[in-house]
Length: 147
Length: 147
DNA sequence: TTATTTCCTATTAAGTCGGTAGAGATTGTC
DNA sequence: GACAATCTCTACCGACTTAATAGGAAATAA
Ligand code: FES
Ligand code: FES
Image (tube, rainbow over all chains, first blue to last red):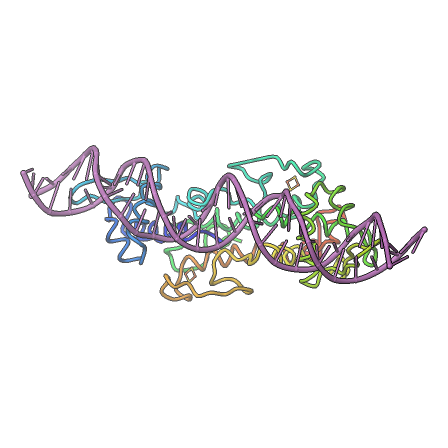
């Protein structure tokens, strides 16, 4: 399961994407519109800002805005920012690789082999789908749409 | 990430699969051979027995044995038994469906749509790969091998 | 100067993870 | 029957994560 936090993040980003790349929205507006606890959303947006996905302005007429076009932000990227590694095994993570201490060797590991394939299939979808694809309404996106 | 427990379970089942369907192995033998904490493995095997995957016998010369042929036990099934639902969202789980209370409707939910596809891709692999496939050494198995 | 808004840190309650501990029940052997 | 081996069951533990909530500090606009 993805975390509730990641789900909130995606909904918030989707709202910002639909507002437009330069356009800013305030926390309260997003929280109200998307049914997200306000103070929780504060943390999430702040986090996304620190990680370079959003810009912000304080004070009156402040708010958050996307720093990148929606078709350049993938679901996989957002998920990794919020929930951490997508990989089902530490030895398969690209962002947080860790050797499996209880396995003999990665090349021979039969568990690793099957999960590598499942992981590849999974991330093929998540890393190919952008916020723009999600907004579009159609389930098709870059890779699958072309296939 | 899958849990350490699930990883242990798969390794133990793989050991039992290689011993043969009727053949039994003792907890200690599996624990030693697979580098799994003995008492933890006890719980895992007991759990797998209660869930109908293993048979057991107590007392001297006791042990555990597979109740089904290795080519009839999928990785996906084991994972669901140990870790619970594989689905990335409650509204996508077949074994533990729960409505998403913070979403408007499932048909319109854009988050649901992308994760449904990722989930389908993921489980296509996990539900098609059996213990026998894993033992086989080749990365190919039923569905992918045929495609 | 005041209202508005984001920024930041701390705290919390409940749950999960990866074990450990120890007594009980069953089976085989002498 | 005694005894050892083995699985069975329940409880417990510390560390960590999750989904928030709280409250004040800092910046901005009017
Ligand atoms: S090497 Fe990572 S699961 Fe075996
Ligand atoms: S309906 Fe389940 S994520 Fe929206």
